[in-house]
Image 1 (spheres, helix red, strand yellow):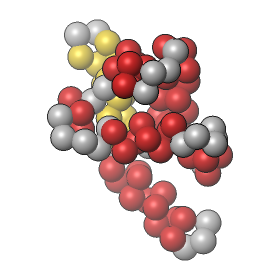
Image 2 (image 1 turned 135 degrees about the horizontal axis):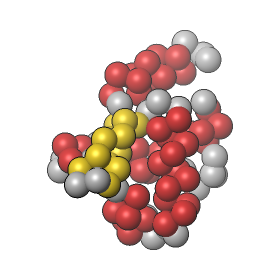
Image 3 (image 1 turned 90 degrees about the horizontal axis):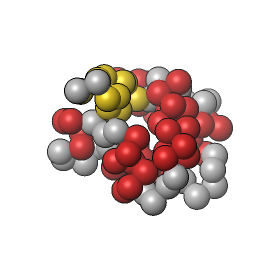
Image 4 (image 1 turned 90 degrees about the vertical axis):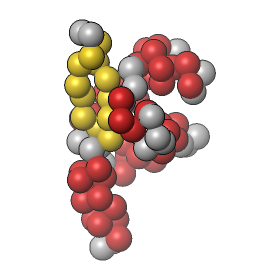
Amino acid sequence: MDTVLRTPADGTRLRILAWLKEPGVAERGATVDAVATRFALPHAVARAHLRLLAAAGLLRTGHVAGRPHYRRDEARIAEVARMFEKGW
């Protein structure tokens, strides 16, 4: 789990998680294209980041007009935060 959050060293995944909490984005979620544009990433890299975060349970995936939208899973994020606080 901590590998998912710490790699790559530039903190892209943490920045994606923070952005997905912002008003507007938090309610509607974001597509791979939106993440790629927002963070100036190649589409494949943005998709890989989102898939890793989803596999870790930190994002939920829903579909709008047939396209996947990613949203934070606040309950899972809180659970992970508690694990880190306990020294995991």
